[in-house]
Length: 158
Image (cartoon, rainbow, N blue to C red; front, side, top):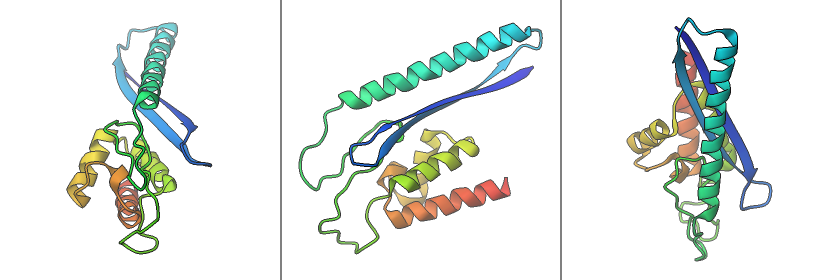
């Protein structure tokens, strides 16, 4: 048995200046030992193309979603793509530094999850279990830091 891992990610410009959105997908496949080198290459190529098409479809789907236009209302999304939470800092009842999770925190969470082979569904389950939030995109900065610490500890013990 031959095991291959293929992943694809793409960043696109975000809605705010100097921000980006990262869309990522990955898969593992088991191939027969009897395949030739060119057959293995062809399977990797087909898998990569599938992942690329999947990410492109998610990006297209994301761009076609209606955006919330009310001021001071966070953008909500049900996508499993890595989409940053959007909020304003006006009237934050939690005090300074406790606003929505930052794009840097989201990027680090996604990077750690990829290294730990944790998919988006599992990340959201973890956010729900530990913080009562349906997605890690809904965490505040303090919760985001705690989530990152938890993933880093898991990586160190792996």
